[in-house]
Length: 396
Image 1 (cartoon, rainbow, N blue to C red):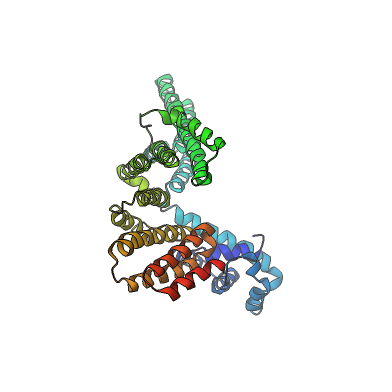
Image 2: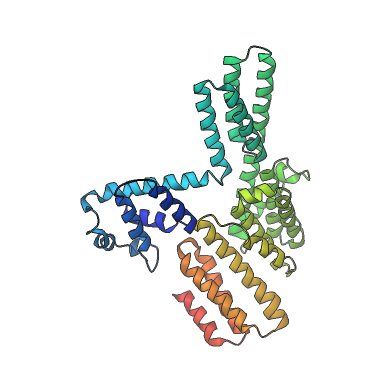
């Protein structure tokens, strides 16, 4: 760790479940654990704002000087960081497919070293099936290459036929990886232009948009074969239509992205925050069309997603609360003019709490949007003091 501040951020980023897992692992060790004293102290610190300039190393030293040998503090810091990362890694192995596969690959190599080929064959088959199910083609290719080595060393019959099939599969998955990379590159280009030119267009950006529209990957009406390439294709088309002001066509492709996620439920579980981002963009598109009929169902789906760490909690807050407020303002206040002051106050309190808790993880533009929208929300309800208070937060 370069500084106590880096370690402070790591400790503070842990969720309750991650802290519980870390302390459980620590309890398996016997004897004095200086790193746990440091952990508890860092966890108890509270900064007004999580920035390096607000962090004071001397405050930490003052709290632990009677508990730890400060001469060895740098050693304790490094050991604590190592133990936290180890705990997070083992916890991720239980929920993250990439980590599960990496663990399975390590076990396969151990079994090969031990010469237990029947167990190895079973484990290899399971790993290949899992990699194929989640379209982890990089891992699948590594497994197939490992299988070719085993084939050359130990196969006695039909070795050429087996090798030919293995290499056919390797080249097939290499092509799929290349295709996915190409679609992702196009999506990143479109997204970059969208963020820069959604409000301001010039000749250069217009020419770039036309080039992208004529890209063979997007020009075709045929859907690509893999999950990620399908998402990239339809999302890129949606953003291009939005850039050209064709919102009705844009929302069709945003809806197609939603349908793709529905068709691959295991990917929704694997990438909950990615699903949240695409779903949020779908609702923003619906908002531009003033269609709020899809909001309740999609918001319920987003709210029910698991949040596995601090970053995911922050991402969920800034997307869900932003969309809840959009829906509340446009569907309830502006349309029905109901007496909803209590609901507005509750929503504003929820936003205020989230901004305080996740301040360091929320981009400035979204913070500004929360303040402006909250001010407008209260103004529309004739709650002028509250409206001014939120407007003042912008200057803060």
